Length: 261
Image (cartoon, rainbow, N blue to C red; front, side, top):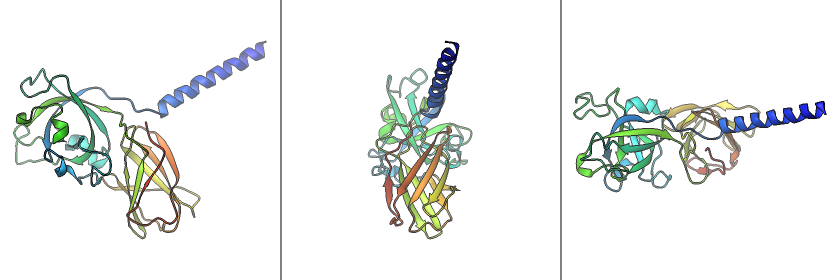
């Protein structure tokens, strides 16, 4: 009886540990609320937000749509914040004239709002350090603010990104210089590190951030099936095995069935 009880206790503890590990590894936790300000750009159809410092290109075709924003220096983190998602509410208590009360919008960081040191922080230099500022796509901004206001006080929190489908890998560059753009990231949304492994290799090779969400490798990977090991900035790692077939060519995009949560 004693040995059976010990065995049951061990199973119970193992189950608790597994559940704890699962909860730690799977699921990004929203941050606390913080204050900031928000303006808008890109026009009523957000066509002026295409491209951007994260490298996502056409935001319509890559799935980001019109709910996007450019982050100030204090938030952009030299591109490491690309793909992060934020829930934003206009601070009605501080600005009842220009806020839409009771509304919120969730955006993805897709661009950088550069500082303008020729203007004061409170008079045009909205993205100057150390200000935490979101220059939002106009359709997203108008979910929470009234157009004539121009700039509004906000409260925001970083939240899990919810994306349709799996993570996507676009292979650009040339021989010995593979530039891989990773899009449609769920979970934390932002990438901390990536490694690649060709079918002719036995070990993973670390890639380096080139700019925004573009990561580079200086290996010769032509004609090989490619796998990627991706770690998000909250420490979750997923392996995308053989996601790129051996017949790949530069400019192609490959969609996986895996996603972060």
